[in-house]
Every structure is written in structure tokens, then in C-alpha cells.
Image (tube, rainbow, N blue to C red; front, side, top):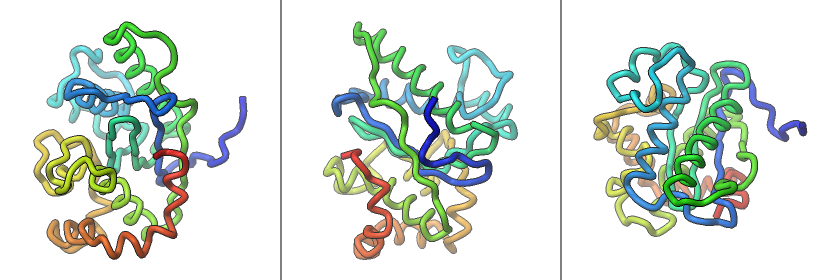
Length: 214
């Protein structure tokens, strides 16, 4: 087994991403996006817990103190996804990524009557080394749909955690505390995300986070 280039350490933050093999589309409709989101929620929690088929948003709160990772934010794009994670338990991110990848691949292959891998090898990860890098990476992840020309208004994109940060999501799955500690209000947070000039200014410092994902 080869060692990861980026060691995954407890209580540290990581930008994690992967994409479809040969850049194929991995999310085709509402059901695919919803399934992946539910899978993320389910496998962030360490057992015991209900079977996946019986898992509902109402059961989520039964084990919120027993997580292997904390999901800080996410964005699901048609052929790839970005996650900002905090590792809570030893090897938590590796276990989480393995389980969500295997579970979603099984679902996707069964539905599409296909075989073989869906995602392009092992997930990639970048350690977040400072609070400044954390908030700029967070913005980078959330503005993906706009930068990818999927929407003009980020609030129109349902498959990221941006709406959750605006308190417009009825079924939240992210730990928002760390990010919100950096802002005085939801409005100031929203202004930060919308600050395109600020994004461009800081892009040089975080461009390595997008390696080979386009």
C-alpha cells in the first residue's frame, strides 16, 4: 500500500475531491445528487445506526457526537465533487471516502446496468494550513457552479452547501461554526462569497487546490 502524499491528521481540515473516470458525468439527475448527499451524511456518522435504507434526516441527530469526519462544506458538480472535511477520528477521512465512493458506485452501476469503476482512482486531498486558507478554500468550493457556468446566481444551485450557510436549507448536514466564527453575520458571509475581486486576488494562493479536476 502506498502512503498518501498528504498525511490525514485528526482535528485538521482538508479539501478533498474526486471526479468521474475519464471525466464522465457522475450525477445525472435529482436522484443521483440526493443519493450522494444522503450517503455523505450516513457515512460521516460512526455506528451503530439504522440501516441505510431506513436512514432519514430525522435519525441524523441521534449520533451527531459520534462522527468520523465533520463536513464543513461541499459542492457536487456534474462530473466531480469537492468536500471540505475535518478529520475527527483516526483514518476517518480515508474510511469516509472509501465508503461513500463504494456505496455511490454500487448505486450508480446498478441503476445504469454498468460495471467497473466510476471515480478516478484515489481521492485527492490538500491540507488546509491556516484560517485564511480555510475560508478562501470554502469560497472556492461554493463558487464552483458559477465559475463552471452552471448558474448565474449561486442561490439557484441546489447541490452545494451554500444554501445551508444562508440558512435556507431545511436538512443541514454541515458544521458551520468554524466558518461563521470568521464573519459577523450571514450577510457579511454572503458578501465575502460574492466578492469576485477578492476571489481572483486569492486564487493564486489556492490554485493548487484545483489540480486536474476541471
